[in-house]
Amino acid sequence: MRKRTIAVIGGRNCNNKVEQIALNLGKNLSKVADILISGGLSGTMKAVCQGFKIGNGLTIGIIPGYNKDDANEYVDIVIPTGLGLARNVLVVKSADIVVALPGGAGTLSEIAYCLQFGIPVISLKSWDIPGVIKTGTIKGVIDKIEQLFPRNAGSRIMREKRSKA
Image (cartoon, rainbow, N blue to C red; front, side, top):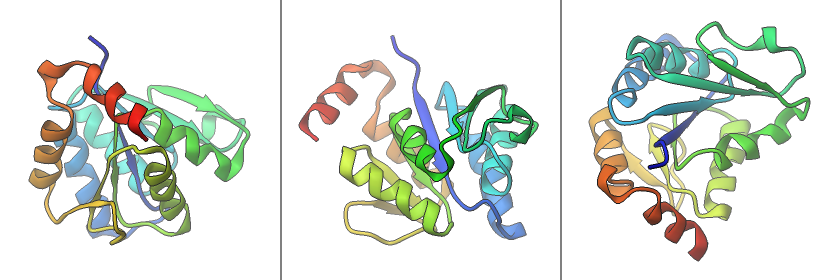
C-alpha cells in the first residue's frame, strides 16, 4: 500500500501563535500520515517539520533554491529545485492531501494549484476560499484526513479522485 503523504503549506514568516499551531499540527499529523512534505524553509514549514519529527515521521522539503543547506534542520530529505516559487506546484502535487496554515501569496498560489488539480486542501485558520475545506481545529484537520483518505482504502480512492479532476 502506498504511503499516506500530507503537505503542509503556510508562511515563511509567522508569529508565535501560528508557529505553535504548526508544531502541534505536525505532532498530530505524525499519527495519521507516513510522510510530511513542505517547502522546507523557515516559519510554518520549520515548525510543522519539527512537530512531525517529534512523532518520528519522515519529512521532505522541496526548496526553491539549489543549496540543500537552506532547508531547515528538521527536513530529512531535501529536494533542491532551483525553481523559485514555481516549486510550489511540486509541493502540492507530491501530496495526497494539503493542509493550509496562515500565509501570504505563496500559500495562496499553492491553494490555487490544489483547486486546479483536484487535490483536497484543508484550511486551518488560513484563506477562506470556495472549494477549500475549512476547519478551526487540529482535530478537525485529522478527522478530515481520515475521512478523505481512509487507511484501509489504499491509494485507489486518491487515484479515483485525481482522475476526475
